[in-house]
Amino acid sequence: MWMLWAAAGAAYPWHGLSQVLDDEPVVVPPGIEATVVGLDAAALSGAVVASLDVLDRCSMAAAQARGAQLPIVLSDDIPVDGRVGAATRRAA
Image 1 (cartoon, rainbow, N blue to C red):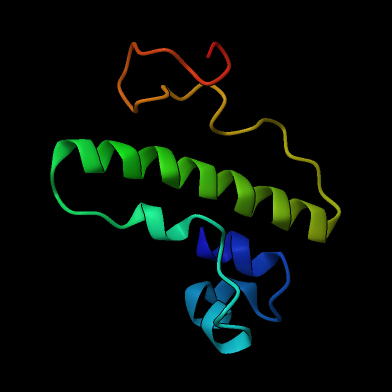
Image 2: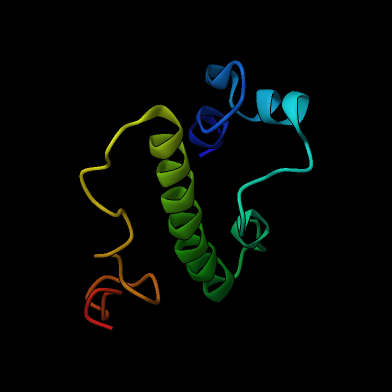
């Protein structure tokens, strides 16, 4: 995630998080705070969904900055509640 976010505008994106913090530490991917949670199952499930949203945003930002086109939106087919067999975002 951090390398993709850095690819959207940092000078040395291959350094990932350290480049983001060196370049502009106040600009982090929207929603990144929701990806860090405790160890209970419900919180972890929510963090998985949040991580997919952040990964989508980072991928889209990097693709736009680099003039690339993404083949898919990553979280479209991920279960809304993070469980296999649950309703997906596309279906929701």
